[in-house]
Length: 217
Image 1 (cartoon, rainbow, N blue to C red):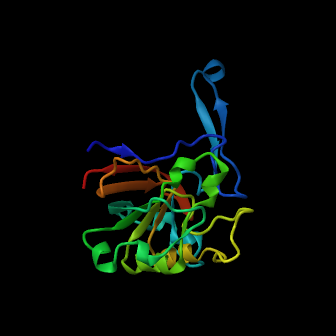
Image 2 (cartoon, rainbow, N blue to C red):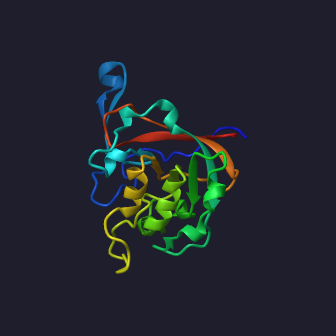
Image 3 (cartoon, helix red, strand yellow):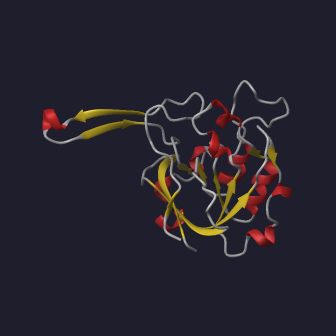
């Protein structure tokens, strides 16, 4: 297996969480005017493929610069959940049991298939983890990777009345000190087990974009 890029391209107009500022790229130096190129990027810490630090939802949570670089290299276990409906809850029963999760695994990567909707409105009506499912992952001490923008329901006009309010899945995971990697590209050819490298910027912040790569385990 050669390294596989699991990263969304960062570009203006890309999907962002509803209400967040969009991504912008503006030339601050050009070849014609300056003899070299420099681009000024404007984006949030949660744009594109990115990692959430505990400080994203936890008042006393760690920021990215408090983590060791090795904390972003994971022995990943891929779980396929095909055929999910829009805004369908993912329950603990849909995930491997605790003993199976703990076996030589640092991260659970959940492929819902929602990456196929990147760029259209349906992307925001993705399946989501129930608080119990997030707790199931956190109790195993695992990071979580997703091909969706959010482990919790993303607010849209199509939200269901019985969906959990707020960000309880985030809080279960980040409150336990484990990372979340969102907006992954998860191609069909990925094996069940691989090494996930998702290195963020070294910054005193609640999250940052990453270049996520899958390598042989």
